[in-house]
Image (tube, rainbow, N blue to C red; front, side, top):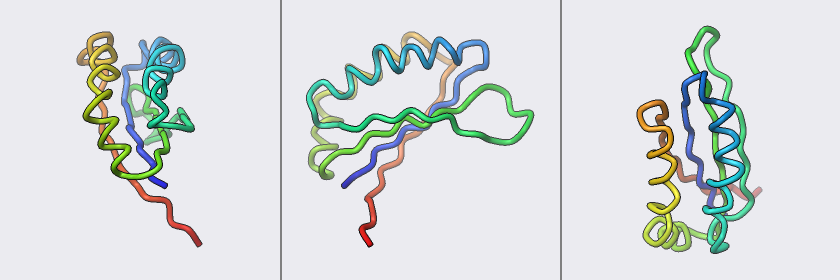
Length: 102
């Protein structure tokens, strides 16, 4: 199983609006085709005194081929509205991981 995680950092004044947007728009748009599944949004705690809030948006997908298909066919329709809404008040990076079975 592949885990696709994007960690976002958002300005403090916008973090509640960001959470609402993620739950109401980003997650449904990301999962509508079924290529990405099991969404999980989690707060990331950092250093005390750090400005803003960080959140990890995690999905699972069957394999790298499915993730590449989502990236090619759907990601711009999901990320473009997010970036347009929050502009420079939001930063993020993605990580792709494979679950280790033991």
